[in-house]
Image (cartoon, rainbow over all chains, first blue to last red; front, side):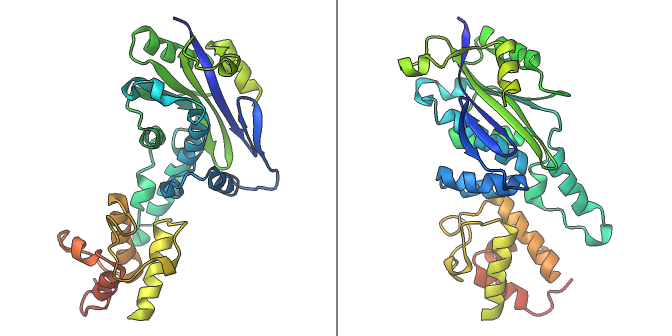
Length: 215
Length: 86
C-alpha cells in the first residue's frame, strides 16, 4: 500500500506553518528562545518540562506537536508509530554549552540537565514521552536536507512492516540558525474525513523536496 | 534562616528552569520531589551541583541526599550546619 503525507509543519526564523497555513509570524524576534517561548505558551499545553529542554528539543517538540495534534493517534498502535528524524548539526548547539562548562578546570561545574541533551536522539525521546509513542526510532545525520535518505529509511520501515505510521523530517538548529520540516506519513486510505483526505500528499522524495523548498 | 530560604527558592527556580513557578509558590516545608514541585532525577543532580557551586558543599554520602533535598528548609538547614565547607 502506498503512503501519504497527511499533515506537516514547517518552522523557520520567524515563521511557523502547518499544512502550508501560516500559524505564527513575527519578525520582531532576535533569538530562537524569544521566538519559541510565546508560541509554546499560546499552545497552552501545560507541559513545564518544555522549559528544561535544549533548543533543538524545543524545536522538534513544537514541530511534532503541531503535526501530531492534527492526527488521530488512536487509530494507530503506539508501538507501531515510528520516528525518523535527521539534521546536519546533531546536538552541536548544546554540546558547545557543555564544552564551555568544562573548559575551566578550576571552575568545573558541568550541568547534568545540559549534559543529558548532548545527543540528538534525546529530542526523539521527548516527542515519544509527550505522545506516548513506542515505535521504531532513528536519528540520521546528513550534510543537507536529504529527501532520498529519509524516503529510503521510512519506506523500508513500511515495506518490512515495522511501522504503521511514521513521523519523519528535518530538525536543524545551531547558533540561532534553525529550520524544521516534520511530516506524518501513513498508509493511503487511512484518512477519516474527506477534508483531510483532500490534503494527502503522496509520500515521495519529490514531495518532501517541494515542502522543504516552500519553507 | 528565612533570608537563606528565600535566596534558595530563587536559586532553585533559576537552576532548574522552573519557568512557571515563582518563589511564593514554594512552601519552605513542602516536599521538592514527588507531590511537591514534581522534580525528577536530573533535577536532583542539578541540586547537588547547586550546593557545590554556590555554597562549596559536597554531599559525601548519597544516602544523605533524600534528607537534605526533602524541602527548601532542609536544604537551608544543611547549608547552615557547621563544618560543612569543603
